[in-house]
Amino acid sequence: MPRVKDQMPVVIMGGLLLIYGLIVKTGALFPVLKALKTHKSMDLQVLLCLILGVLAFVGVLVNAYRKPGQTLFDRFFLQPLGGIIMIMVMAMAIRWYLEPLVKMMSSSLNPLLGFNVYKVLNLNYVVLGILAGVVMTNTYGIPKFAAAGVKCARFVLKMGVIMLGARYSFAELAKLGVYSVWLIGFFVLGTVFFVLWLGHLFKQPKSMTGVLSAGMGVCGVSATVAVAPVVKAKSTEMAYTIGTILSFGIICMFVFPTIGKLAGMNAVQFGAWAGTGILNSAQVAAAALAFNAVDIKTLKVAEIFNITRVLFLPIIVLVLATWFGKETGQKLNFKTVVIDKFPIFILGFLLLFLMSSMGLFSPPGHYKGKYIDVSYNDRTQVTPEERELLDREFKAGAFSALNPAQFEAVENLVYQYQIAGNYEDRNDKEKFDKVGRARMTELQGVIAAVKANELTLSKEIVSAIQYAIKQVHKESKTVVTLTDFMIWFFAFGLIGLGMQITKKSITQAGGWPLVIGGISGTTKAVLSFFVVLWLVKDVVLN
Picture 1 (cartoon, rainbow, N blue to C red):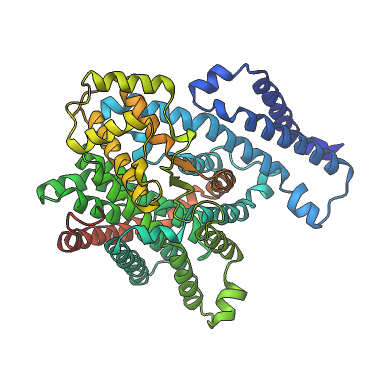
Picture 2 (picture 1 turned 90 degrees about the vertical axis):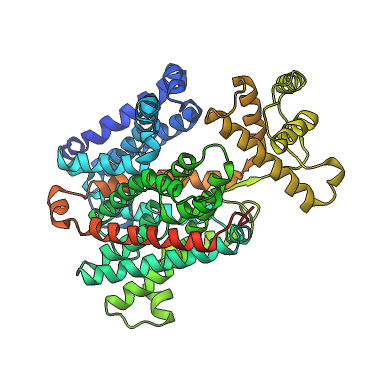
């Protein structure tokens, strides 16, 4: 059977997947996976290995006895199966082994470097997947049996973008304050149009300009991935955009705190500036903590402004879809943009975003499926052991160094064994919720002060307070499930896109994305600095 011989790599991968799944099932790899902190995914590992292994053997057998054709079954299953299996094996290796190893190495280097390499460079499965694809295609090359599967990458990536819509909610905007919405709206739209103008000035391809404008204007990697299919961006253009965003963010992470200190910015002002001018969420948090690790207000404000920027993503997608249609010479009307030419997958993204905003997946005020619940119930309480510890340490005066607000929050935690409002106010939901959230913020400040060595508490006390804070942070199971699908779609799609980035295409791309990104990013950072100093005062968002 000559065709079976051609499919031998698929047979080997299918066999290895089944063997690995059985080994995981026996628990033999539990110590290794626990060390990597991926042991909670053991059931998923077994399931995926079983499904992919069986599909591999079924596909090979069907290919051996069936005449090749061009039916939907051939084009969407038999032909791309080999590539799909190969990319999924790479995705699983990255998610369960490579990314955890990078995290562990980053943590070990933290004392030496003074920062976490994993967080600063954003070396998560997204970036590692692209790099893995680039390395493979430029060294070993894409095997013949996998070529059709690699071409599925863009389709799978679009499915991931659809899932992304469930993680955000319009209701979040109502809580963010007038300044954050207007400031971010101005700078998001301003940066997008500025990059489009620079792209035209430097005679760059429309696809490159479009994807770079979204990445620099909105929320970095997520915006790049969401907008790329809309403007038909190439893999190299996506890679250059992501590289530009991360490089610029690293510089900002070190420069912003220094300038903020020299300018005498208060906690809220710096948080607003960092959340507006820095794109990557991890870099926003790092800059905020570098500026002020004690006052949790800085980090809170920075993340609020960062969240606001992310919520503009659907609007920017619509803007760029219209712009790209016009720039490519299409006669635009509602039917052209929305029905004929507008990407169906973006409509799927907007539909899930709308459903999320209506509270169908989670309370409508959520962000990425996470929400605060300070109501009275058994799930929000600390453990009996932690109750005893907190009560004993409180009586011993362990919290005497706290400021009055922090001391009151700890005292209430000791009294109620959970973070909540005052029991007598429980029927006034708004007041009860407000007091409970304020106490949670003060406890977060205690943890931040300990991490900054401004306060000394035992590890046991810190652990108990962290557990109490964790208990009031809830996650929607529906959004978690949709996010899991999104992660795997992104992992598959970005590895496949990385395999389309060759040395030749990298050479041809040139350095214009870095030039345009540097100009637009610096302009936004400088302008937002002066606008924040002018408009934002310490009372904003308190």
